[in-house]
Image 1: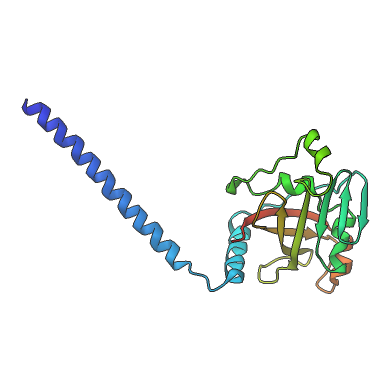
Image 2: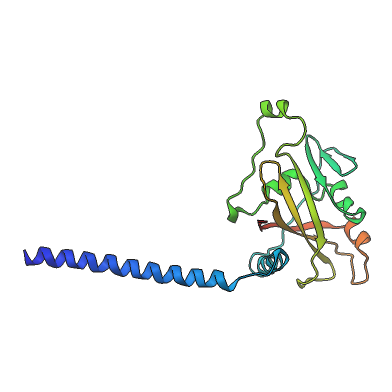
Length: 205
C-alpha cells in the first residue's frame, strides 16, 4: 500500500513540474512578443525582411517563363494564368519578360506559413473565366535599400494577393545582373536581370 501511494505522489509531482515549466515557457514567449511592439505596419515589415535575409537567404536559380506572354494595361497573361501588377513602368519588364509569373510565385510561397495555393480544377476554371488562383495581384512593389547587397543585386518587397485570401502576403524579391555596377540605373538593371531569390515574409494584417 505504501508503495502505491508513493507511486501516486511521484506521478503528481511530475505533472506539477511539467505544468510549472509550461507556464514559465509561456510567460517567456509572451514577454518576447511584447518586446516586438512595432509602431506601424512599415516597421514590422522592415524587421521581418531583415530577418529573412539574415536567417533564410540562400541564392536561388530560376528560369524565365517559357510559354506565351500577352499584356494589356496592368494585366499579364502567362498561357492561362494571369497577374495584375500595379507597378511603375520601370518594373513592368519583370512581368513582360516572365521573370515573375504565377506558377513560380505559388511554388515558392514560404512553406513556414503553411499556405499552399492550389490551382482550380478544369471544371472550376470553365465556370470562372476571370480571376482565380492562377490569376493574382501584385502591388506595393518597391526597392529595399536598408538590407546590404552587392552592386549586382537589387532587392525588393511586394504584396501578393491570391483571390481566395483576404489579406495580402508580403514577399521579397532579389534580382541579379552580373554586368551591373553601382552606377547602373534601375531600368537598365532590371532589363537584363534574373530572379535569384523569392520568399514569403508573412501575411499582412
